[in-house]
Structure formats: C-alpha cells, structure tokens
Image (tube, rainbow, N blue to C red; front, side, top):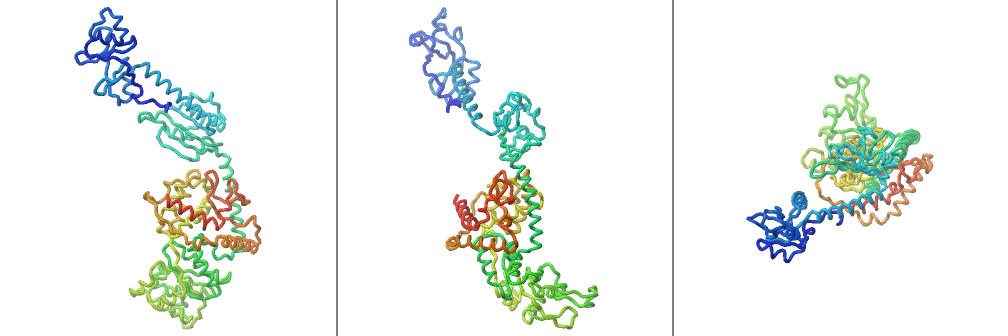
Length: 599
C-alpha cells in the first residue's frame, strides 16, 4: 500500500563497502558515492569513497577525518527508531549476524515524501467524493477539515471556519465532536442538535496518536426535515388516536381478539378453540405461566359467548384474605357480622349474573372455599353470608392458574372433584419463548402505546436491540416485554433507543427458536383472505371507511417515527402495509428468525 510507510527491509540499500582492515583495497572496488563502513577498536565508523580519495592521507584510520561514528541496527528494527538515529547519523548500517546494507537520509526522505503524496491524494479525493458532512478539529478545538457537505448543512464556507475555533460558530454545549475530543467517547448514529434550528445524525471518533488524543472527527447527515415531519406526525397521530378512542366508546368493536396480539400458529389454534365456545356455557380452565395474558384470553371467551352488556367480573383468588373470601364471593346480608355494611353487599357471583365470573389464580383458593364453590357450580344456588334465602346463580365460570393443579390434587391442596368440574375445557397459553415470532409485533405494539402515552416519538429501534429482544428468554413473558418497552421509551435519548437501556444482559450465544409446522405455512393465502374479509366487515359494521381503519404500529426507518400514517401510505413517517398483513407475520418473520438462528 503506497500510502503507508514500508518496513525497514524495503529501504535497505545493498551497495556498500564494509571492511575491518585494508582500506586501500576497499577504495579500489568502490564508486565515489559508495559508503564505506569499518570497525576500529569495537566502534563503527563510516565515510564515502570520494571523501577518502580526497583526503590528504587516504589511509588515515578512524576516528580522524573523514571518518564519522555511526551505529548498526537489526533489519527488523522499527522504522521510527531508525528515523531518530538518522537525525544524528547520515548512514545507519543494517546487520543480521553480518552487514547486509544500510539506510541513509536521502533514501528515507524520498520514501516519506512519496508516501505522503499518495496519502494526501487519497485523503483529499475521499473528502471530495463524500456528500455527507465531515469535519475534523485538532486538540485545541480548531477546525482542520471542513467538507462541501458541511458547507451545505451548516451554511458556513470552508475559508471562513478553517483554522478557527469551532466554538466561534456553534454553542459549546451543543458540540458533540468537542465532547468526543475531551472524553474520548465514540458516538454512532446518534441524533444530535448542533444548533437550535438543525438536527443531524452524527458519528464521532477521537483521533489518537501514540495513545494521546490529538483531535476529533465527526460525520453528520441532516435529518431536520425528518424530525420536523415526525413531530407533526406525532401530533396528528395523537389527535387521531383520541378521536379513535371516542369513536370506540360510541361504537365499541365486537372483535373478541382485539387485545390479543400475535399471529403465531399457537395463538391461532387457541383462537380457533375459543371460537368453538360460542353459544356454550362450558367451564373453561386457562393454564399458563405468569405474565402470558390469561385474563385477556378470559375476556375473549366472554366476548365470544356473551352479549355486549353482559358483565365480566374478575377476582384474584390469591389477593383476598381467606376470612373475607366468602363474603366477597357470595355477599352478605345486613348485620351479618360486626362492621358489616348496614345495607348488606352483593357478592361477585351476583354481580356476574348473566355474564362471566373470572377466577384468576384459582390454585390459591382456600380449601374451605373450594367446597362452597363446587356446590355453587353443581347446584347453581348459594346463600349469602348471614342470609337464609337461597339465591339462583346465573353465570359462566372461566378459571386461570399458573400452577400444576394435578400436582396440587395429589398433594391434597386442591379438591379433585373441583378440578374435574373446572377442567371441562382447558386452554394452555404458551410462554413467549415458545412463540418468538410474536415478539416483534408485541414489541412494536407496546412501543406505540408508550410513545403516545409519554408524548415521546421514537426515531429508531436498532437491529442490535431487536436482536437482544429476540434472544431473551422472557421468564416474565408478555408482562416483562411490556415493562421492558416502557422502560426503553422512558430512557430513550433524542427519540433513539439504546442497547444499554435494556434491563437485562445476554451471553453471546444463539438460542434456537421453535420451528414452524409445515401445515401452518400452506394456507397463507386463505389466512390473508380471511384477515382482509374480517377487517372490511369490521369497518362496514362500525361505519368506518378504508381510510380510517385503525392500523397497528410498526417499526420505521432510522429517520421516521413509530406511529401510523394519517392516510395509510408507506411514506416517511407512515407505515408499510406489510406490517399489517398476516403473510408478513406468519411467513416472512419465521424465515427471518430461522436465518438469524443459523447465523
């Protein structure tokens, strides 16, 4: 490479004379400009054949004139060391068990200058070719390089700024390149605001020489128009979102799965089972780890088989003290016990009349209450606490637990008859780690939600962050993912999510993802048609047009935001309709996950 200094071996001149005695003989075989080396009493001396010939006494011995002292180095010596020696000596002998050549000042100077010419040509051509802004400051903060791209972005001519302190043109607290000079911190693709009216995407690096920072370089791309567009889009999207919420209150959607995100094969099978519960009163037991969203599936079961005005009453069996459980579940008559409300109180069973009673964490139900709940399920009748009148029960039961009820039955902690009464229809909700294809859609859904809630438009979600999300095991399942996305939005800097804001760290290893079944990929066209049909029917039923059908949030490019477009076109600040298409989530995402796992 001609723009770099060659190794010492390439600079060795091998035409020389070396003698330890017999100087006259050496002169006979040397040209006038040939250097002559000799050792005298252990010291190395050098002169030229011409100098010896011109001397009054050609046979004079060192250290007399024209001999001068010099040194010898090995052929593998650093070039920097040789340059320092040549500052004192005109010639330096190269020895490797025996003399093999020499290096002199003219040869080295010519090589250094030729290398500089190549380096300067490469450097200047590179700067002229790049259309981005490139600026370099020295260790005093003076501008050394200012490209045409910098002139266009900042409207400052090179002749005006070169050689002057950069702080004369930009506020001190807005100079990322100056921070890099002082701290040595590198920045990659960070949104930066060097002036109040300008936004750029910036990369900076310190320039180091011999472990010392001697300057800083910055590469910047103008994204002011994209940022302004994102801000306008965010404000417009927030207004649209408010209007959509108001419209939803006036004409609530009857899609029972509107809150369940995911298009993996597992989720589709569960939805298909829930649809079959239509017009049935079967008791449903939902099984799954904590955080998988069991209550959302319970609500979907309720919406599938109950009317729009039917109540959905949820009770957490592990959050109510055993002594109060009976009164909470069945209610009480006035004066039933000390401190009771004088008017009495309806129980949750009565509040769920004509609807659904959701028993969350049913595995925590006290044994004495299990007997009474079993009686209600069998006889459909119960007594309020302190009451003497039998009350008819009219509700459907959906229970959920994250425990192994069969093990609790064997241990005697859960009644076997109640278990079989609840386990008429069971639904096993898979953990998030077993349906990683849904992670992307869920992540963008939560990102959209919290961006609107906290009024913080997000400019970019890097591939490294998404890769970390896909690698994580998610022991807390969807709840943990939701909390993680909220954290990322809260700590986002300038609308950019950083990998260091993740609340977890991962080892550098790949974890295999669950494979997609072959039959799940054979009906993609049918899935697309069914989805389009459902969206159109929903829009017709709610009086919407195709233009204002709600859209899901998506990931944008690095200069666009995480909000849906106003008109639905896939332009900057808008969305690509592929993110809404089931073909994308069921076909393209699994292929991407498979490819990433192989890598």
